[in-house]
Image 1 (cartoon, rainbow, N blue to C red):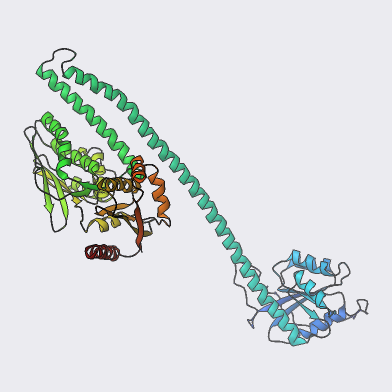
Image 2: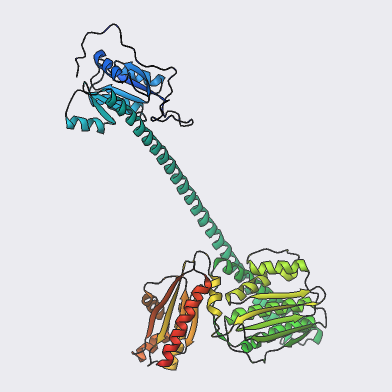
Length: 563
């Protein structure tokens, strides 16, 4: 280091200065000239109390293709004042100044302008000191008396370029952090909204359930008393009174049905409605609702014809949901007819498509084209509201359409004003190749995978044990899953959830079925084997997944035949 008490020179040699100085990379809202741009000007602040050292730096920076605007401060305080007045692209500083010494100089300059590169002028040749200089925040150091013009200029230009990269990375980092904070805040707000919606939905569902319970109790009492009066147990009544009491009972049942519709709509929207698809005889389903429909037809003086003796294969469906759909369609058809109108319930087997059609025809008022379009939209998009004035487009039909989809079928309507209407829906038959692809179409977007499990019994199982096994698997099957019986000793379970340990799931459910526990105690050899047969991504086309599934089923049947 040159002695700071060297005699002061009266005149300083000239050096390149350009006014006004264009700072490099100062303002974030305007284009910054690059250090590599030959037309740009580098503004350099030299903090040096020794004029000879300053003259050496000035001499080194006098020549070169890049113009440099040089400023001089003889103390740290003067340097800080200069930094308050203008921006510099780079700072060259000595460590020993009249008002500061050592690394404190670098630290205070760095705190003043963190986005400006600092180069230290040092006469020491000590690696430990050099490391401390860099650790304090300086970008580089220049040995006094050894750096030539080219070296000094390149060190300055490289320092500016590095600082520009650091500043840009800092800016991008701050933007990313701000975006991350914003996303986190938005996620927290969404989570709060979701919790609030869940609470509101749960509250609404609980309200409906409580309201339904509170209404059903007095309604049940009313029905009991009306029945007592109608049966003549409280005194003799005439035929006209008996007919009026019969209508009162039917209307009480209508209220019950409306309550069921409200609860089912809430359960469908929340995914809480249970679905239990099993082999069902269509004739038994129709016979179970025959009396209810006949009562409604008699009350409206409508001629009712029910065709239920046709021979059809066994349907694969939730029988209770089919009953609800059929009653809804029949009551709507009866209400659409005038006195002495005609309603016919029919059943057909569509062998090519492997499904059973159940329909309701009426010769009533028919449906206007606008209403028919609303029906089609409502069937396709559950939850769509309709005009409350359109009595034929009520909540019951919407729920009926959704029940049909859960039963892997569809609800259709054909109607002309004044010509009556035809409502019909389809049900797949047991063993139909349409069951699996229709179930795949029901899976919602968040579902990503489909896993196919095989449940099979050993040869020692008795018929009673097979029935208990079917009960167990039905209990295991959740709403979003599909259970298909391949034979009396084998079932396929398709699920959109991945279960790495299905045995644990089986054991947990087994504890809840007393009959199965008794069977296991009576026959220790009884066992259900579980095997994963396939896993597919729902991003694959449904045809490809169905083809793979059908191939597995076919191979399994071929193996069973050979055995």
